[in-house]
Image 1: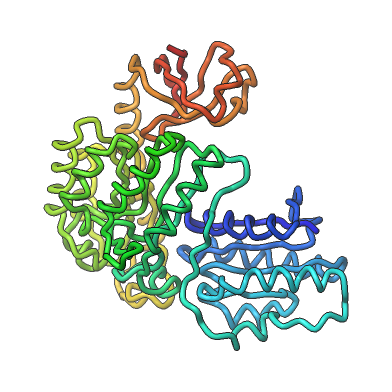
Image 2: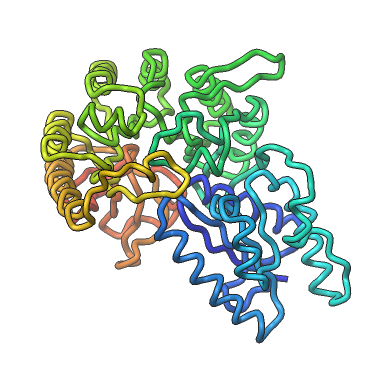
Length: 451
């Protein structure tokens, strides 16, 4: 019996797909090479943008047609499955399972049921989409392991949900309120990942720095303390060398967290801190609950405490009511801070959010033009900062052969920059760290020689 995943959206979705894959592998399933020939197709969905939902709707239509030609099962899960739970069942009755965000604990039983239905057409199904909703809601389920087989990197979910309710964001409505994973469960996963040879982990949550989980003695542990505990656990075997985390909220970027990043050698000196906009007026309308001055203060503290820190961010343009002065304020902030990189996008109205009903929307062509200016500026800043690193010697986690030239190896630096190692380096470096000198820059990829 074979499975295939189509995963859309954020890193948390990728981690959740990996955790589902672990369950399937334990139950004897094997991975299919494509979606067209599998016995079970799992579509893990995203609701952050309408484009992601529209793409999934198109795929559901395609697979509904394919189901008329051959026997296989389709399971829809993720934020879109939660948001459009009833509508999808009505519009796509051939989709076998629609699993909401808080029914993930049922997945082992569902997979067993699918296995039985593949063998017996007359098997009495218990967990079809019409019946799942009758089951009690259990709360968010943290899987014990989110590792993709044979990967040297792994995501580790530490919390789920969001309490911030930014006016443009659908996440709190589909993932629910913040819930922190118990400390001991996280440390057990770290131990398991070390035993599997994982070299780098990324701690995940919608807002990781609001983490407040309990340890085995019932004590509440905050995020800086959790980071120290994870680093201490990794010290035991020295297999996991780099620890990352995302995403963070500026209101929770405490001095204690900054000091912990500086003190722990395994914590990568790269912080992703979404600013979203450079105008206090727009930040207030977004309900981001901080000012530009507060954000700049946190960046100042990061740079003073960790001089070699790299910074990335998110920037949202074209929010309702945005003026040219607001755009200028954002460009000015970018020039002042000089982010190493940024994820930049324009406002996408999401039904169910507060901003969806704001009357003063920006025309699409103006949103695109303003976003274009932001992207152009960031590309220049990124190029400038990358060129300044030429000649430096850095450590690289080697991931694979280069896609373009098999005699070269591909990897990334502690600060996330893609790097190709030249000069026919030994294949044994894959999955290990290499020390190299950054010799040249090709696009956004460094080219380096071993040192």
